[in-house]
Image 1: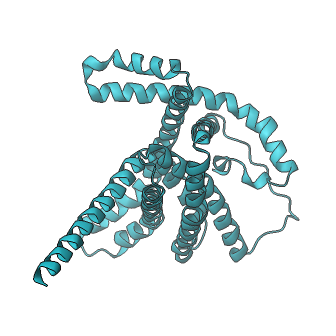
Image 2 (image 1 turned 180 degrees about the vertical axis):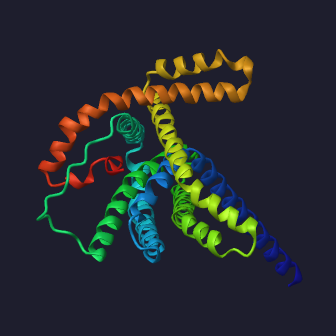
Length: 324
C-alpha cells in the first residue's frame, strides 16, 4: 500500500514538473513574442492619451477604463481566436498579413511626420452644426479609441503569433493571451498615469507641505507637454523602424532576401564600433525604408483608399493619426 502511494506521489510530482515546464514554456514564448511588438505598443501608448483630453478630470480615468475593457475584448474575444484559426488553417497568410501591418505602420509614421512638417488647415465648424453633449462626445471618443485599438491590437497579435516557435495551439493560445493582457495592462496603465500626471503635479504644487514637493509638482506640470511630445516622437520612430523591418523580413520569408541582406550588410559595416551601434544602424535603415514606403502610401491612401472607405460608409475608420 505504501509503495502504491509513493508511486502515485511520484506520478503526481512528474505531472507537476511537466505542468511547470509547460507554464515556463508558455511564459517564455510570450516574453519572446512580446519583445517583437515594442514599436506598436509605444505607438498605442502615445496615441491613446489624446482620447481623454478635453474632458473633466473626474471623467479621464473612467474613459481610460472603458477603452481598456474594449481593448481586452478586441484581443481576447476577437483577435486571439482569429489568430489561432489563421495559424491552424492558413499559416501561409501570416507573412502577407504581417507585411500589410508593416505598410500600415510605415504609412502612419510617415503621415505623422508629414503633418508635423505641413500642419493641416482646420476649417471653422458651421454655426448650425450639431454640438454633442458631454456624454455623447465621450461615447464617440471611446468608440473611436476602441476602433483604433482594434487595428493596433491586430498588428500586435499577428506580430506576436509570428514570433512563436511552437505549433501547439494550446501554447500559442496561452502565449497570445499573456501577451494581449500584458500589453493592455502596460499601455492603459501608462495612459492612466499620463492623463492624471498633470493633475497630480498641480495638486503637489499647491498642497505639498515641503518646498521640494511643491517644486516637484511644478516640474511635473511643466514637463508633461515635453514628455508627451517626446513620447510621440519615439512612437513615430518606432513605427517606422518596426514597419520597415517587418517588410524586409516578410519579403525574405517569401523568397526575396535582397532588401534584408542589404540592410544587414550596411549595418555590419559599422560593427567595429560595437554591437549596439550595429543594431542602431540597422534600426535606422529600417526606419528610412519605412519612411520611404509610408511616404509613397500617403497619396494612395488619401486619393484612393479614403474615398473608397467613405463610399462604403467606413469613412470614420481612416488612419488614427489623422485626428491628432
